Image: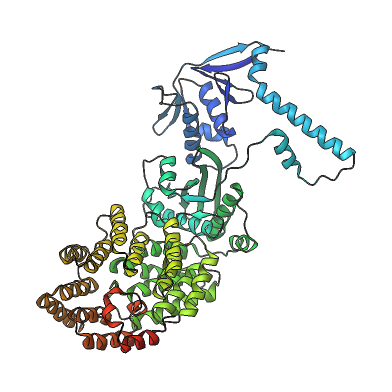
Amino acid sequence: MADHGFFEFGRFRLDPTGRVLYRDDQEIPLPPKAAHVLLLLVQSAGSVVEKEAILKTVWPETYVEEGSLARAISILRKALEDGESGREYIATVSKRGYRFTVPVRETKESSSRAETAAQPVMVVQHRRLRTWLVIAALLLAGAVVTLSIGSVRSRLLGKAAPPHIDSIAVLPLKNLSDDREQDYFADGMTEALITDLGKVSALRVISRTSVMRYKDTKKSLPEIAKELQVDALVEGTVARAGDRLRITANLVQASPERHLWAESYERDLRDVLTLQNDVARTIAQQIQVELTPEENARLSASHAVDPEAYKLFIKGRYFWVKRNRESLDRAMDYFQQSIDRDPSYAAPYSGLADCYSLFGSSFDVGGLAPGEVQPKAKTAALKALALDHSLSDAHNSLAYVKLTYEWDWQSAETEFKRSLALNPGYAHGHHWYAHLLLSSGRIGEAFAESNRALELDPVSPIINLHLGWHYLYTKQYDRTLEQLGKTLELDPNYALAHWYRGLAYEQKKMYADALREMDRAKELLPGNLAVESDIGHVYAVSGDKVAAERIIAKLREESARRYVNQYELALIYVGFGQNDRGFQLLDRAFREHSDQMIYLKIDPRVESLRSDSRFANLVRLVGVPD
């Protein structure tokens, strides 16, 4: 047998023929593309190999982004223990390419050593031959082969089982464009891919709020996976040029870290919804998650969308997530522009519905009466469903209106369940459904939904906050403070967490601590009358009647200019012990359809009213289920 040539460097040897890397005599598995890149670098050791040359050689006649090359380099550096022993094998030459930095020598080895080095390959070849002989014998004997050839080969060759993956996070896709305006687009594509993967019931997919914290992070993939408690990560890039869109996606197993799949896509922007579905379906196939017929249908169904309408919708969602008055105004403007551009596009109608709902909520985001905005929210949600009845977001939007404004509990639950059936990974849907369960006294189910939302969005401040709120309304005040402490670790300036800590301290009769926390919330939410009202309630229950009445006067003055939630005002009088006046204001809150009314059965601040027949009548009128 002729001598066999190798490239040797340090403890490593590279077989250029089979592109097999060995450390000493141990084979190191490499993806084919990464092995090809290594061969090019080793052959030009000491010289810079341009990125363009590598891309053209390793990925001929195929469009790929530089992210694929960077990923291959990362795999190689890990395989070579690059830097761990104080030795750098592959150096990055800024804006040019890469250079193999260590000396390389070519060797001619005797056939005996070559045979020894190649033994694993020969064993595979012998096994493969034996496999085909077995199959041939079975066929000749007329046996019925019930397994596929691929399955037989896997069993006989001892092929490694596919990785077990049931949880995944999509890291923020990187914008490769020089146009910072396209950051909105990249973030929107990230959210869309998360949404599509969330439709797969067998997967736990981390929500947008949690993954966006890793945008431009320097943390390693294993670190991120450990923090999010997922089995795998998707990373990639987005480049938009006019009406053309290019996406690359890489699927990486977290532990042990292993590159599983990479692909590039280029489509017309009108086909962006189809593209998103294709990527999600391919990832599900790669990790061998079984799709139900309904899930497969949902990931196959899509339609063309006007590119400009899609871009405007993405911008709207970007600002909606911020949940303050200014950002909601901007979100509504973008959603309306998207609708004007393409009236047949369902998603922006759902976005519009969610904006209206927040404007009329008790958080005093918009200072608008529920009767002014919630009917508009319902109209927008119904329009979205008329255009696309499979849109999970729209069912959730409609459910929220049915619950908080119409008090149609049965219809609300039907819509929440439909939303979650369409997208089991929708953290926001689990979160809002938990509101219905908690307010109707189904405590165990409420905690299950709230914890499911937290699994899907573990570092979301609002999701963490609402678990604390569940503890508050079930009178577990120490656990409330503990959970809200965790929330403030995520964001020390999160106003709602300070606000709710104040409510918990109030129930523990720690009034000084309650006022300190609520004053901090007031600083972070200037002009928010709901916080002001709750401060008034603390003054009332703590016996500071002068301070409480000062807040009442301010709220009455403000009511001439904007909506003041009568439920919150009623709580101040209840704190005084003036229950008759409290009931008068609760009756107004009922007529105005304040969203706070659905929590009558569980709000600990109205405990003193529960023995009064008027209270039972209010609960009945709101329709809270027994």
